[in-house]
Amino acid sequence: MDALILGCISFCTSTIAGIFGVGGGLLLIAILPSFLPINALIPIHGLNQVTSNLSRAYFGYKDIQYSVIPKFFVGSLLGAGLFMYLLKIISIQYIPLCVGIYILLSLWSQTFNDKIKKYENYYLIGFLQTGVSTIVGTTGPLTMTKLLKEFKDKDKVIATSALLMSMTHIFKIIVFSYFGFVFYDYFDVIVIMILGSIFGSYVGKKLRNKIDGQKLIYILKILLSTLALKSIVSTGRLFIS
Image 1 (cartoon, rainbow, N blue to C red):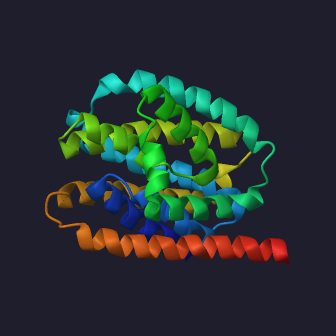
Image 2 (image 1 turned 120 degrees about the vertical axis):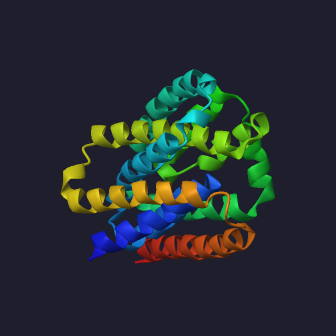
């Protein structure tokens, strides 16, 4: 039953990402702690996001701006290497706390977002996005901010961002495979979530120019904040007990 629910959630979050370019991964990582153990959160999220982003890139492949990829790739490779080391010294019990804090700051702190926007170099964006995402799950706004400044066409921004995010999550899967995470243990969940992601990307592409997203964005921010607070409180209770 949980697998079917996660499949539906994956469809919804992938649809949101297909429409807006961001938000789906952040919503998914906020929901997953209610269904998966802590050690599976980031690996399963990463594998699902590879599918969601690759399918979104595929459906918009004509709009991808390939010139930015080499620089981002180099930064991602370095980021994955450094944060692979950091994961050796960070307890997985802190992951929900890191996720919750990151979500709240990215949603409501203009100062936090202003600092993120300063990272304008694709090498550095790749480094930070891939590295930090191994801990908090998703850092899509880093790439999106840079792309929005360079390309005014939202289809180009969304398609290119999807491909770059795919690279981020592929590196993340490699990192967690190195640490011994067995993806096959969640085979049914993974397959159903992948199918939901692909279908969601397709629907999101079709709905992109038909939805006024302002009200939906506000609702998503409230929902995300609630889920983020839940993750923080649950982690706090764990340490108190």
